[in-house]
Amino acid sequence: MKPTYSNCDRKVIVELGKNVFLPSQAQITTPMLSIGDHTRINGPVVIRGQQECEIGKYCAFGYHVTVITTNHDVSRPNLQLNMQRAYGFCSLEISKGPVTIGNNVWIGDNVTILSGVSIGHGSVVGAGAVVTSDIPPCSIAVGVPAKVSKLRFPKEVVDRFLELAWWDWPEDKISRNKKFFEADLSRITRGELDSLLVE
Image (cartoon, rainbow, N blue to C red):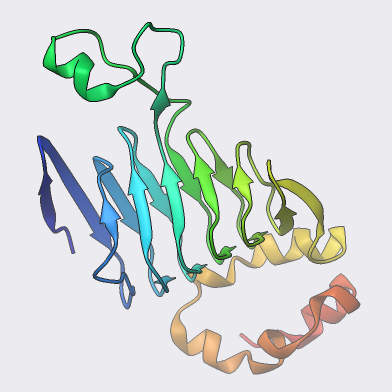
């Protein structure tokens, strides 16, 4: 689905996958927002700036998450964007690039994600964190600025988890793999993980 919204002088394109929950109070002003299948934005969210934002499948966002894809150029005499526009001066908006959030990522309440950031598949960003740099897959990141505190699983299990890319499985395969989805992957080996899988 590709609804188009008009926000001031900006055109906003939002592409939603299947069974996405995006609350009505979402504020979106990025030129392009893409959200993958079965992702839930559970509370108020702000996604703004001049760069794109891509969110993967099966993600979960808490309340009051903010994604900012541009920032102010603080080297100029003036800091107010509206004044720059009114006088026809150069834009104050700068960016490190789009924001990419992988598949099956959990973003806690009151998290802020800044431009140019990539958050890897299967990662967790703890409540109140400010993400200023990339988060590797299957990491737990907390704090201001967000730092990786640990991996969710042992490294060999992380590698296998990423190979499996279960978020790309058809729903009937997901349904058949109850033991896999109920397993504590922090306490098993790669071989034990493989023994749980059903084709």
